[in-house]
Image (cartoon, rainbow, N blue to C red; front, side):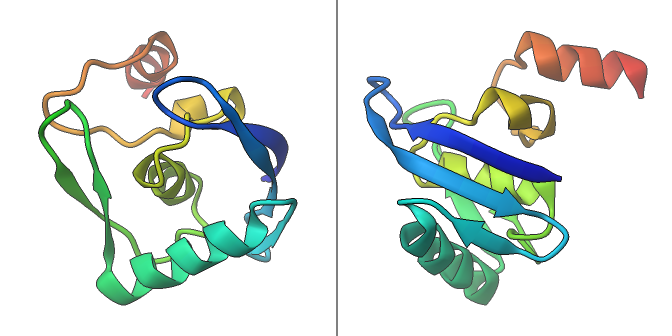
Length: 111
């Protein structure tokens, strides 16, 4: 999967910058590449990211290769408090206590 998009902070929908991602190689580009790469390295070392949904709760979501797996990449971005881009919505991780989006419900019904 290749992604080239603008990321927005959550909450507030303020534009944060751009990210380019290639899941086959794990390569990043765009203005947020260094920040995302650093967060991915930390996630790999910890073997998890912290998702804060539903607020004020948090959930440790296990990851192995967040730059090569779409679900883990979506979790990484969410843990950094970015809105998960529409291109990754279907890969957004399932977290106990969080309501599924329409895209996620469609994925579950088709599995």
